[in-house]
Image 1 (tube, rainbow, N blue to C red):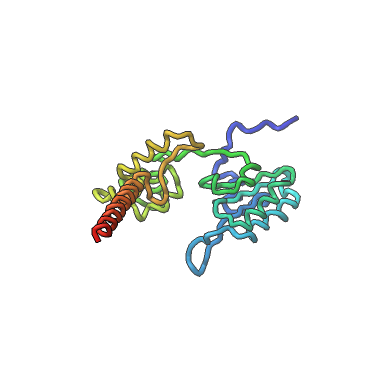
Image 2 (cartoon, one colour):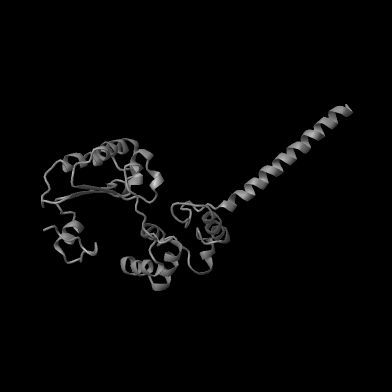
Length: 239
């Protein structure tokens, strides 16, 4: 008869499928991601079109285990224009029994032509306690330090990994991005508007209130310019 669908997607770490996926050895799975730049010692800033082109021949092969084939494009927001176009051609006519999963920090970083061909699934932010525990285990941070980083990470593993070495502790924590009164105002103010997902923080460290001093400076500049113009006109009339 028909196979019964599993009650959960959980796969135990000791399961053979889990091990093959974790070691990138599963014959029916291909992962496309940013490559490591050996010269610069960091990940490349883009996913190349050559990496995306690996998907096409893979999807036209017979499934090694007789089931579905899967493609994971990790950090899809780093696709450049050429790689986006190459991926779009695959999404337009995907082969049967295929799952193509795009992982992106922001769906709007992808063009509408790609988004319209995908079903969007939002993941909730990771709980601070779980994030702090991960930081302790992964990077050997103290419990206090891990809690400080987790509090600034907005429930994101990626953000936590980036902040683990740059979050200021103790009194100096007031200078951390997303930790001041302006950031608190943004979380309240920007979440008043309907959005696909709640606003948590601005990765660039800018807040809405940052524009207030700029606006005041502009107004004062206009007022000063008007005063100088009037003084110049008065001086001319006297002459």
